Amino acid sequence: MTKQKHTKRLGALLSGTLLFSMLLLPTQAGQMHILVDGSSYDGPVLMQNSTTYIPMRHFLTELGWTVQWDSAHGVAAAQKDGNIVSVDPSRQTLTVNGQTLSVSVPSQDERLYLPLRTLGAFLDYSVEWNGGNHVSLTSGGAADKWSGENLYWLSRIICAEAGGESLAGQVAVGNVVLNRVDSDEFPNTIHEVIFDRKHAVQFEPVSNGTVYNEPTETSVQAAKLALQGVNTAGKSLYFFNPSLSQGTWIADNRAYYTTIGCHQFYL
Image (cartoon, rainbow, N blue to C red; front, side, top):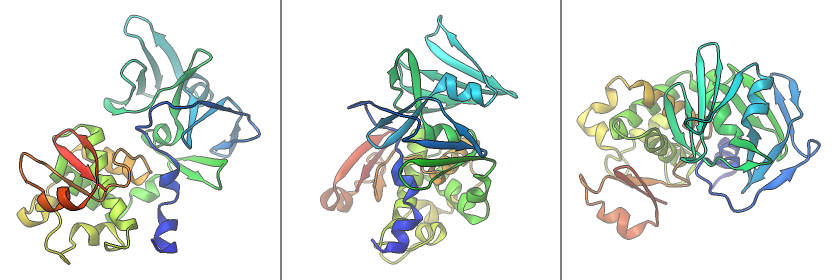
């Protein structure tokens, strides 16, 4: 990978969402410096497999949210300005305004922890890592990443390829497109990757024209999350739906990574 491509997505590689608990390491306040709109967050932090986690109640309360535990349903819920965030630790899911994503939800000292990048992306914060232990969250700052043709085309290819899939499955398709942007094997922009014809058409919706259809709200949300670095497909560069395509070349030549919904993903 070239230095330029490595730099473009370095921040996205610092966080993942489908990481299962192996080891929880408590981090001292001085070891992780988090700024939220310029103000320091001094609460507890957990590190798990290079992912930064913050306690839901402590973090959201500092941002002005009302957080409660719903003992009847076993979920934590938070509200602010008509927005609703809920976490189900038994199902390991995070739901924001009706959009649900599977995430790792570790607990320690009777606190539920959430991945900082994923929560920030869901709440429309720009999340930027400056070195390994300095993180800045800027409200509304993520809009810069969503402007122009990046969100336009990424949301459309996601909807055309996986519009009927879960949010995680739709984010995964976005991850594949962005992984190709980072790879020396493919073009350098989202638009060029989607319409790449070097080795024939890469995405069926380009051939049948569905890539031009208006995306759903969920597909737009999936594109935003993917652009913010939320990842459910690892470093996958390929995917296919076995019920619609044999995917012979992919299955024979690429390493299998995971299956999400109807799609199999390959590195």
